[in-house]
Image 1 (cartoon, helix red, strand yellow):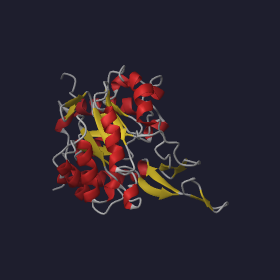
Image 2 (cartoon, rainbow, N blue to C red):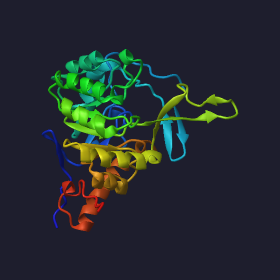
Image 3 (cartoon, rainbow, N blue to C red):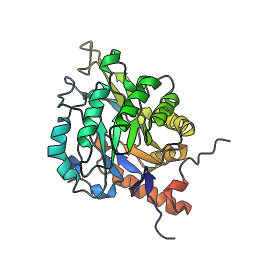
Image 4 (spheres, helix red, strand yellow):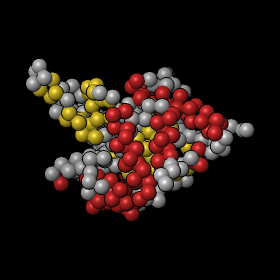
Length: 306
């Protein structure tokens, strides 16, 4: 049997394999370039980029939890102009797909970022983080309600030539409803889930461990929640679904693919072992060989529930 085909296409963009590294866990790519062969990845998703540089939340910003971690980084980044000048030149040199994650506090901020990214060489897609607090709605995230999610994605879609992925928050009543809204607004794909809201307390000091009090929970602890949401969303939309949440090895990735995700993102695992994402590519290849399956796309959504 010849080598299995791990390639995936989303909105005309071909990825050599379905393994992406999640925003906020891989810096701007250059940080990991001496640790792993970036060309082995399906693609890199950058840290969230905002209109202006952001210092982020007060420390401490991370803490370990049972089967996971909490983070309250606060979208620390060097702003869109700094990104274009200082980070994009390196990203243009790597032989893998580059997805830029975009964040903002108002719809206008999202639009201002994507307008500046338009026409930049070295970018393949945008991932729009709609879990950000909407300052015009009293801090409620854009992804909390279908209307807000639709407005944000529609405005971005109208102002960029890049295919866009809407990154969905799990902290909602019905994530499938949000997914349907962003699909209607023009999203080319959806990625889920972003982190769950969590908290940790120092009982000796009687104080929250994180400087921001609450943070985002990620890692193996959230995998069952993420898996269920991916399965639910995959049945509700026609656009490609990208799975995120506690994916630590190839078998985890396969669970998400069987549930309906055509690609996956590796997050927390990058902190445990930077080689995890590359090992995952090898593991998926090995699984297809073992099962005699020619293409990874033939596994997508093949969960049997009857």
